[in-house]
Length: 369
Image (cartoon, rainbow, N blue to C red):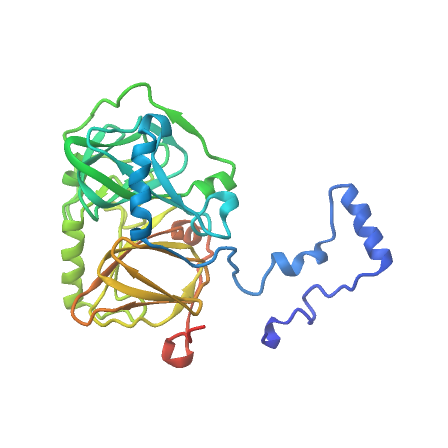
């Protein structure tokens, strides 16, 4: 460890135990107290420290088990029929990484979930299927593959697939671990089905037009009025941006899903983005505070996270813990690759906790462990 990170210096806790001190600590413990210097170096690390580990969940391994869940339980029995993905070091809070939860939900044609709401915010990324839909606060929206959908905190929402559709599978993302850690979560079930308050696809039609927003509408919510971000619009935007933008050496063509009224994050606690890695892209390594869950939306490649290589292809899901070195590579020399991500950056940024660092050694690339 570098000298600047040594705890053996003035300003760090360096108290050596003695029989008298041990007795003193025990006396404090009986009163529900303790001496700060016994824990200070642990709770105030030199650099950000994550309790999560990088992980990769292969869709090919999970898909059949996700589908099998639809044979074993109904949406009515389960509430939501989801196979959740849990980090090896975050099982105690059911988190995929940091304070973020993710899972894979399946719905058959003709099925629907009961309308419900919770204080936790939620999002969806559509993986496969046809004629799936969501209803958010009375707004019914049809879903297509690679669409990104939000169900902000405390909004009534339900999901389903039309009788004439095909089985739908999508990734869920929620801030449940964070809201539970803050002891602020709740849950409610709607009595019956939500009445529809607007025409079909009202939200993406009215708020999803590039550069145009309703001049006579008042939106007073702290989250985006655009509940669905369509892949048919997102991917062409990435391609057009690539024509006029210098490729970021770390993230390729990186674009954030945003609230069209503010330009900010889509929700208060979770952000999302899509990045395009051009053919042959070999990203450099950096690290930052904030946890990220990725899904490959297109193509194939690999990421090196804290010196370990994780190979991914379309529909695979992986996570990058806070302050972990990471770099992304596109394995194809002819086709681009796209990575969807959701993260906790709105919280990190609003609390003034964001920081980042670029790897300077080895031309910006990690050495494989």
